[in-house]
Length: 109
Image 1: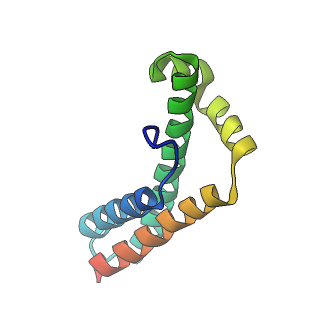
Image 2: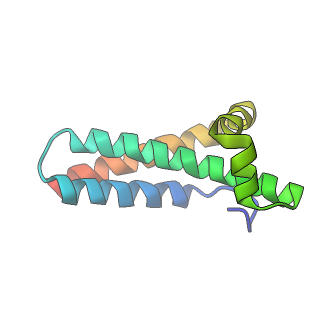
Image 3: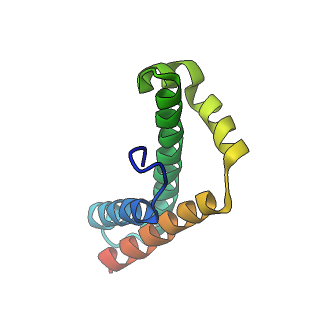
Protein backbone atom coordinates (compact mmCIF):
# COMPACT_ATOMS: atom_id res chain seq x y z
CA UNK A 1 0.00 0.00 0.00
CA UNK A 2 2.79 2.39 0.82
CA UNK A 3 4.60 1.76 -2.47
CA UNK A 4 1.59 2.70 -4.60
CA UNK A 5 0.25 5.28 -2.11
CA UNK A 6 -3.27 3.86 -2.00
CA UNK A 7 -5.33 1.13 -0.45
CA UNK A 8 -6.57 -1.76 -2.53
CA UNK A 9 -9.83 -3.65 -2.04
CA UNK A 10 -8.10 -6.87 -3.06
CA UNK A 11 -6.16 -6.76 0.21
CA UNK A 12 -9.42 -6.74 2.19
CA UNK A 13 -10.72 -9.63 0.08
CA UNK A 14 -7.47 -11.54 0.63
CA UNK A 15 -7.59 -11.01 4.37
CA UNK A 16 -11.22 -12.12 4.44
CA UNK A 17 -10.46 -15.28 2.47
CA UNK A 18 -7.49 -16.19 4.67
CA UNK A 19 -9.33 -15.58 7.94
CA UNK A 20 -12.48 -17.32 6.75
CA UNK A 21 -10.53 -20.30 5.42
CA UNK A 22 -8.62 -20.67 8.69
CA UNK A 23 -11.80 -20.36 10.76
CA UNK A 24 -13.62 -22.92 8.61
CA UNK A 25 -10.77 -25.43 8.62
CA UNK A 26 -9.86 -25.12 12.30
CA UNK A 27 -13.35 -24.97 13.73
CA UNK A 28 -15.21 -27.56 11.74
CA UNK A 29 -18.98 -27.19 11.51
CA UNK A 30 -19.53 -24.84 14.45
CA UNK A 31 -22.21 -22.33 13.35
CA UNK A 32 -20.53 -19.49 15.25
CA UNK A 33 -17.35 -19.65 13.17
CA UNK A 34 -18.52 -17.48 10.25
CA UNK A 35 -19.37 -14.70 12.71
CA UNK A 36 -16.05 -15.10 14.53
CA UNK A 37 -14.24 -15.09 11.18
CA UNK A 38 -16.01 -11.89 10.14
CA UNK A 39 -15.10 -10.17 13.41
CA UNK A 40 -11.47 -11.28 13.17
CA UNK A 41 -11.32 -10.10 9.57
CA UNK A 42 -12.72 -6.69 10.53
CA UNK A 43 -9.98 -6.41 13.14
CA UNK A 44 -7.28 -7.50 10.71
CA UNK A 45 -8.33 -5.03 7.99
CA UNK A 46 -8.57 -2.26 10.61
CA UNK A 47 -5.07 -3.03 11.91
CA UNK A 48 -3.83 -3.06 8.32
CA UNK A 49 -5.23 0.43 7.85
CA UNK A 50 -3.49 1.58 11.05
CA UNK A 51 -0.24 0.06 9.80
CA UNK A 52 -0.68 1.96 6.52
CA UNK A 53 -0.97 5.19 8.52
CA UNK A 54 2.17 4.26 10.46
CA UNK A 55 4.01 3.62 7.19
CA UNK A 56 2.94 7.00 5.80
CA UNK A 57 4.00 8.80 9.00
CA UNK A 58 7.35 7.01 9.03
CA UNK A 59 7.92 7.97 5.41
CA UNK A 60 6.90 11.57 6.06
CA UNK A 61 9.05 11.91 9.18
CA UNK A 62 11.93 9.93 7.69
CA UNK A 63 11.95 7.59 10.71
CA UNK A 64 11.33 3.90 11.19
CA UNK A 65 7.89 2.37 11.56
CA UNK A 66 8.90 1.11 14.99
CA UNK A 67 9.54 4.68 16.10
CA UNK A 68 6.10 5.76 14.91
CA UNK A 69 4.42 2.81 16.61
CA UNK A 70 6.25 3.37 19.89
CA UNK A 71 5.57 7.12 19.99
CA UNK A 72 2.05 7.31 18.57
CA UNK A 73 0.75 3.96 19.78
CA UNK A 74 -2.46 2.39 18.63
CA UNK A 75 -4.58 5.10 20.22
CA UNK A 76 -2.72 7.85 18.38
CA UNK A 77 -2.98 6.01 15.08
CA UNK A 78 -6.67 5.38 15.78
CA UNK A 79 -7.24 9.12 16.30
CA UNK A 80 -5.59 9.84 12.95
CA UNK A 81 -7.65 7.09 11.31
CA UNK A 82 -10.90 8.50 12.70
CA UNK A 83 -10.09 12.01 11.51
CA UNK A 84 -9.21 10.92 8.00
CA UNK A 85 -11.56 7.97 7.51
CA UNK A 86 -13.48 8.07 4.26
CA UNK A 87 -16.34 5.94 3.01
CA UNK A 88 -13.94 3.56 1.26
CA UNK A 89 -12.19 2.79 4.54
CA UNK A 90 -15.47 1.51 5.93
CA UNK A 91 -16.23 -0.32 2.69
CA UNK A 92 -12.92 -2.19 3.00
CA UNK A 93 -13.85 -3.22 6.55
CA UNK A 94 -17.23 -4.51 5.38
CA UNK A 95 -15.72 -6.32 2.39
CA UNK A 96 -13.22 -8.13 4.60
CA UNK A 97 -15.88 -9.18 7.09
CA UNK A 98 -18.33 -10.26 4.39
CA UNK A 99 -15.76 -12.35 2.54
CA UNK A 100 -14.55 -13.98 5.77
CA UNK A 101 -18.13 -14.85 6.76
CA UNK A 102 -18.87 -16.38 3.36
CA UNK A 103 -15.60 -18.27 3.15
CA UNK A 104 -15.91 -19.73 6.66
CA UNK A 105 -19.50 -20.76 5.93
CA UNK A 106 -18.53 -22.51 2.66
CA UNK A 107 -15.49 -24.24 4.15
CA UNK A 108 -17.36 -25.51 7.20
CA UNK A 109 -20.34 -26.84 5.19
